[in-house]
Length: 321
Image (cartoon, rainbow, N blue to C red):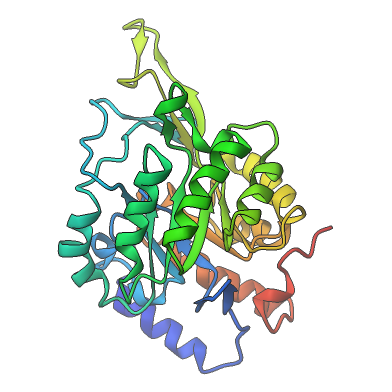
């Protein structure tokens, strides 16, 4: 049985009266009260989880992918469970950036934490125009560019799998967006560090990684694909070792902050990413299993730091050479 949110808050409040490690971190100009964020597409707009966790105690909420124009997403079935993970091909279903500004923003702006919008597009210009419409929102201090979207001019190849593709998006968005710019990197590449350096050179303030790994699942009885478009993105604990390695590589290749994600479901997982060089982490698929996981991971990090005599979470960031 899960512990009620109010009881969790009381327990935590009592502990805060004793000495605790400082959990504050910075992503460029973005100040986070703790390094735990939610991953886009797994936490809705945050409001859906308000009965389970105190939203204002999460370091940052990255809302579901938002595009310039509404998208219907892919046909069903578009999610399938796999050993230690899941595949999805939802296809960025959303009502568009204007709908977000007019209907969602007035509600999420009341949450006392960092609200970050994940932005997607099918050309550098559509990314940039969507970003520009978010630029004036006072309570959206940052955006996260999902450059794993297909570049229709190059036969559907994702922008994020080449340095030139990544550069084209970041460069155009940077011209029209002046707040904190995070770029979410695709793991479906041979050299993710080079792409991270390219994003840094074009003006990215931080990078987040990894996005999902491409995978496939087949129903052997039906002799058919389990997903409507055959392939989908693999997430969950199965991808964690790959994600930790890529975070480590990128953290040693760039000077901007790195946000780590991919298979995090416990405080130990999160600490592993922090030690690999991540300044903050995102929790994704685990939210579907346990809607209170963000607070459990935050509290677990705090407990570990206290137990190991650390005064601040920054002491362990990148501590593994």
